[in-house]
Length: 324
Image (cartoon, rainbow, N blue to C red; front, side):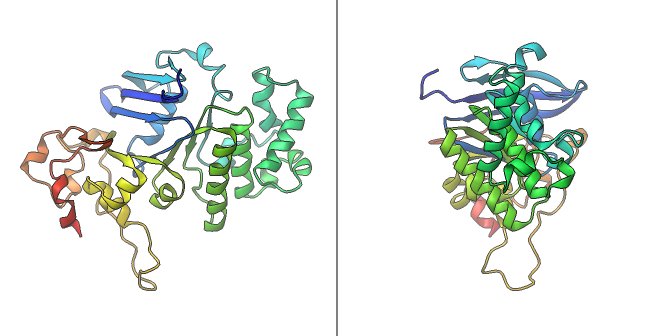
């Protein structure tokens, strides 16, 4: 793989549960040392796409098509025996809800050290020493003491740092961070985001960041893929997405970000309606039932297109300014 090649390249990924399509033709790339945010409301298919990359789809789900090229190798059809050497080594993931993701019966240090032992990177004694060092690097005070504690003895913010330490201890090429700041207070969120950015620079790790929070995107991402109804509806650089959105859904997501100029106690903006169930997705543009710009033409599916890497799937991209 040359330096110019992406670390991760997903092409036309389709995931289904029986006859129900859940992820419909998703394509995205993550370059070396790049942070790419995959954003959208719950039910958009973000986490399913990430689990497909990790080879962790539930048995009831099927990857119907699509290539997943990681570090120059197509791993889409890899079985468990082929994926096991990659997971926790070159390819790591921070899962949602750290408290439920950590083993309550295992000490924190052992869980951080586990991947080094499993992948024969270090013997148990050296793995323990490296785990303590990594706990310190992610900002956990008195890491030797904390390493001997159980997850229930730590705060939510501490457990999130433990998850990050566990994901990064093997110096992965790609880190998938699935809602890494969910359920954390604002101060801890800022610390976690700064930590991921710092570790990305220090270890030259690429990051696929999954979130519904556009404020998190602004803080950390280089590029953005906006997802709705199992499809990518817009993608571009952070500046392109924030200052020149070309899809109505992106425009409305940005409107949900609280601003310092908002009046005190003013009501937060929320997008009307809900993401339809995969059983009830409308034909054509799946956002059309919630879109003020929708027309009869939107019953036909728009393609993801544009110039210079800023792409959008919308028949009315030239009218986004009408949304105010």
